[in-house]
Image (tube, rainbow, N blue to C red):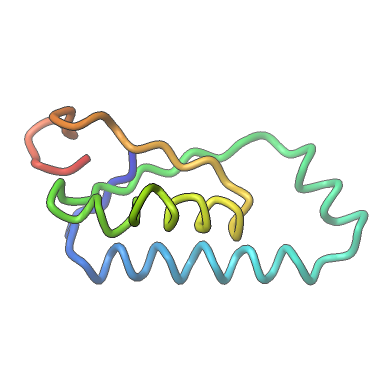
Length: 91
């Protein structure tokens, strides 16, 4: 689940930019720094995205989601269709 208070397109764009920036920073770290990052505990972030914008994250055939995960070296989970953050229309 990805979630944010505003849940508008700019939030999706900001998420994309943040993930790309983090991936770029990780790429520039030394090998030992990357080993340290790999052994760190996982961090979970929840960002609410309006159901109508999920397609922007997924992309055609899941291509955008796959690219985001590869660039950021993350695992992004999106709730199933119809499963929302309580009290919202965000997934």
